[in-house]
Image (tube, rainbow, N blue to C red; front, side, top):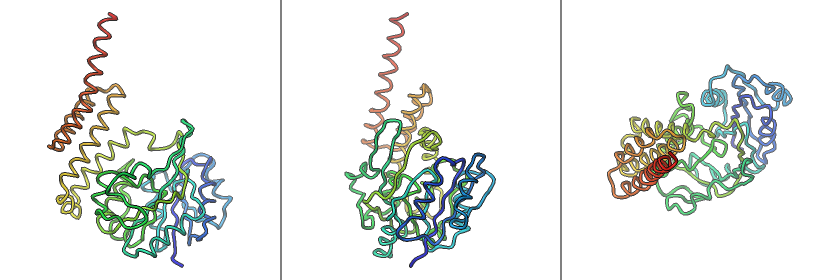
Length: 318
């Protein structure tokens, strides 16, 4: 049986860490090791971890962020496969087995991610993550992607979370660890680097649940998008990536433009209109194409119309 290392970073997760660990220990294919990195928690996380005794390996470190915590776990692990689990997520019992089956069926695949159920407690709703990509011609399920993984991933981060990922260790040995300089989107950066060296497979089965709560880093969507933009810019300067990206330059520039429009849109909603309009024009300059000009017109035109309407309304009231 192939050895699987499970890496769980946690920071002040006393309310949910036990659920995550139990979901890893209850897998139908037992992990070789479950490594929990306590990233300087100041609540009752240590007590929760102590209850598992020798069933998990706990590494306590000073708070240094989730990328550093995951890297600590990777360096301490020894499995042939590495699976990531966020402390506030829960795996279904067959998650590891089905992903291991996929790797055995497709030995050329080095990166596997599955669908998951996203629970929004604020809206009392749930949806499957991959439902957003069913009409995307670049996305296929339960077999290796036909479109080069780098091209599909630059277009959009279809992975979505660390908790649905299992990767061969040899891939991580090739591309390195998470970039600790990224507060967010550090996972997207690593997935892009993985896409440079291996094939990707997306599983249509939802094998875990992910919930929203006040401590979710990705609740700050604007900051997430700003780091997403930074990752896309920096990957272009990677010596290994530059040649591959040059072959899909138009798609790369289009993806960068779309991210900038989304940033501008969120800046506008946050009443930072100057930054919003600047990002709209930066997005326009990112990709000189008819489609991009239309997209610019959509974002810029709608916000300009709202701005003018607000101005006229204020004058009437005055």
